[in-house]
Image (tube, rainbow, N blue to C red; front, top):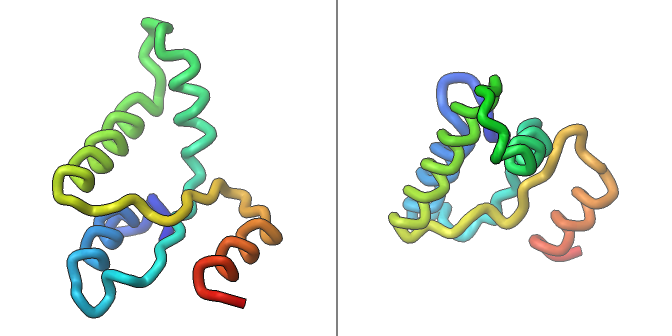
Length: 98
């Protein structure tokens, strides 16, 4: 799943999958182009200037907190874009078996 998708976020779809008895055991890898940005923003958290990704960071933190409160586990892996194909394929093989 991609964290940022049209119409429905990847986090929303993740929650739907994990609540469905038929689908809840499917491993989920989430792609994101914002993880690096979020790490950079976190490193600069003492900076008092407003940054363009502040609202996104807070929205992601809120979504993850709600998932924990609902008893949902986090995705098996967050993958930064651009994707390192070899590590991505290795993780998929690890999750589903060779």
